[in-house]
Image (tube, rainbow, N blue to C red; front, side, top):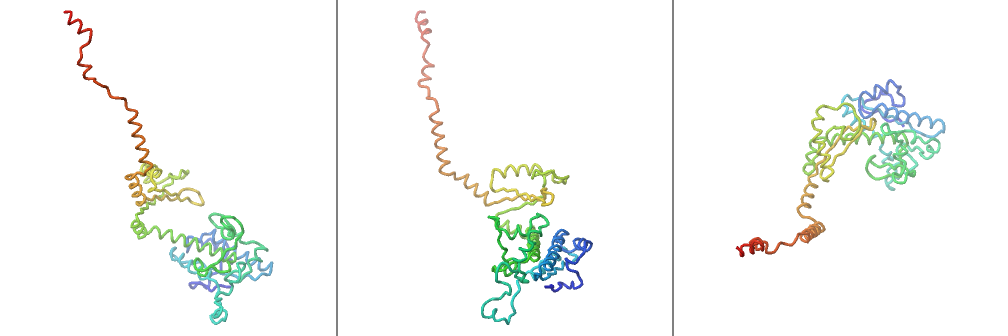
Length: 335
């Protein structure tokens, strides 16, 4: 299935047909999250799908995804996300098809989880011949599509990935994605996660969190993670005493939490997020002002022990001081 070119890119080649130089040039423009490694994986998925189709005589449609070349990285990413949604929507029947009108069967390939919901590719036969899901990997973690989407996260047993009506949301179908479409779905999720992470840094999001009693401070401090890193900015050194106090207080109070986000490639700490939770502070203050029954019993027991340990008071101490010494009294009488 040759996808209709998107955003006027009729003259662009599909990723599977590009050479190394074209891929390198494409990685330097457009969507910054569509890296050279991701382009290589997408190209490998297209080429391997076509190779299996020729060897095994399996009907494997060709899917063309045309990355955006927009000079604005954010707009390029939005265009890639929009195109990915368009290419990943399940194929519907004709609006005049009786099965759609009378049997509520809107989707053409919605029979079982061994069929791609877009192109009808026989995924079961494809896996038996050559499991391409296990050969296509994430560019950052190195995990394959088979590990991330075709295995139960609890038991580790093989479990088919189930597609949804609106790609990332909506009702689940009785169908899946072929390896090439699944890799595009994986990229789509990563792009949306990046967009959401950037949206979280907007001032409006911080204001909304402040209204809920939560304050966030994001600081790129690498030394707090305890990792050996390169030279750090002089401004960071100035805040070292502050972060030392934060780390000490975070062990005493649940109202302060420190989170570290490391770089998946270098495993160095890139971002440190400090959270001040006003709700937890108020809760801890109330607990301090109104101690529990068990704590009150301990205080009462300690008071009783202190009373029992006190020595008895001296009796007639003043009288003993005023009485004369016997020897001195006798001497005075003799005189």
